[in-house]
Length: 201
Length: 106
Image 1 (cartoon, rainbow over the protein chains, first blue to last red):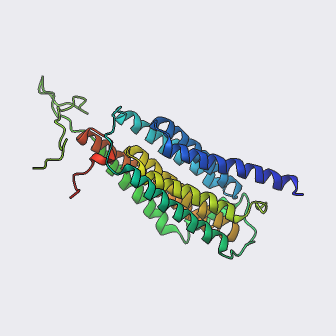
Image 2 (image 1 turned 90 degrees about the vertical axis):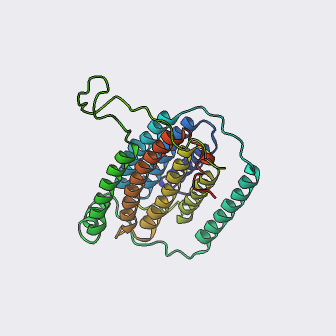
């Protein structure tokens, strides 16, 4: 008979794992992409709960802040920006592709599960740190992982500039009516969509 | 206390399942936004693995958590740039259908 703490852990793990798997299936399978985006937030929250069970309170907080707070909101905004109801034309060989990819994914799942269950893991390892894990984490970041930590900041700066450059619209620098300089021009240039169809003889 | 009652393999199984669902969605999605969501699912699966190993096998030097932080950073950058590319594509092609982004196809 497991103790109350172990039983609670098992139940919480089962709930979180069910949330992760069912939510991700919904993300992939639901026809409405807005529902899929909200379910993705649920998956991220469940994963944060799994992190809490794995003695990683700081990463759980970072997961909620970065994934649920930033990435999911970004995805929702981009859905609103590109949400055009379009009937996607049927492409040939979809059924065959689904069958093949399902087979490949099932095979990969079988491989991963086999590796997970046949490898003799060296458990139990050292006693995990509890709440002072974040202290060790900070020591890592400012001693032996200092270079990747600084490179991550450069990477984030590059991603920020790159995203701005890629998503920027072409605008007039001057007002077409009066000829005055426009500060951050809200008048959008009339733009003919390029490459609407593949030009092929 | 450490989570003794839940074995390490349980976390690995959840992560494997999440990763395979992500791959399936990546291959089979027509909507470009859903492709990006599938990539996020796969990155989360990898993070679950890292955290499980960090907690079960490397409890004192929590290097898995350090790697998970870096993965989260790169995933955030990837999401921002990916969605910017998606907006640019939508402006140029007027669609988010992956089947019609075929300019570089033979």
